[in-house]
Amino acid sequence: MELSRRTFGLGLLAATLLGSPVGALAQGATPGASPDTGSSAFDGLGLTELRVTITDAGYEGVPAETAAGRYLVTVTSTGEMGGGVSFMQLPEGITVADLMAMAGPPPGAATPGAEMDMASPAASPGAAPEGEGPGAPPEWYYTTYMAGGLYGEPGTTGRVVLDLVPGTYAVWGDDPTAAQAPVEMVVTEGGTGAVTEPVADVTVTEVGDTGGFAFEYSAELMPGPQVIRIDNTSTQPHFFLLVRSEQPITMDELFALLESPEEPEGIIPVVTTATQSANTTQWIEVDLEAGYHIVLCFVSDPGAGGIPHAFEGMADILVVGDVEGTPASSPAA
Image (cartoon, rainbow, N blue to C red; front, side):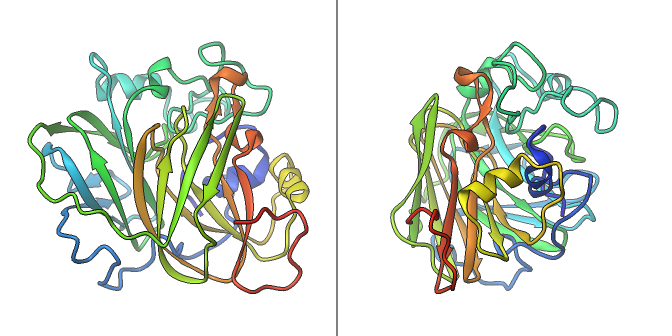
């Protein structure tokens, strides 16, 4: 499974969930980016659609210029490696070439941990503070506009609804080690017209400030197809990583796996969004099986020595549907 190598030094569970080249936990599609059935909960909203194809060589369908507004982004992955589509606004004076230079050498050219993880600058709990060591992103990472996006496994199609504001963007894999080179896209003033809001079954709100973050849920996640709205009302960027555990799992067991050098078993990726900045919203579709689900974010907190948000409260175990052996430490949805 290769979604994105977005973190260093968090053990093989985190590395595998995020697509470490060391190996895969699961084969096949993620429910959040499943083979295209031709229908979507976002049909009929009247939104302008961006259809982006991820190949092993790069991106197809990214326009050089488009108007500001709310978009339905359809992400199709046709290559052997899969990848992500993330929309990150570049600050004035920063170009796509600058972004690539900041991200460091290509995969395999440097020792893991010596690269700057621009996408989700996660690090081990003892990592250096922002700007003071490997893995530290530039200061503007925490203030620039990031609309979000989606990851897709090979042969799958997924959809996300997000808002693009005027500016110059890097459309990229949310990951400096991604095979696909970033593409520049200019979003102009004007607007696309329709700003219809999708109806969400569950709203996940990302809350908190440096030193403490959390996911809050408006309702329980249930088995089957559903739309999840993700609001970032906190002070830092986050992504939403959802996986399923084939066995009951407690929080103590989860953190032991995160820090373990051993390859975990029975952890199945479900869906991963691209990073979204504070005060943004995106909507995703998922189709969940009953079972134990884990929600994580590994973006690092520059105000707390670079500790990943998962170690500051953004790690939950959710029981979806009726299952036996519910762990006592599972938080209520």
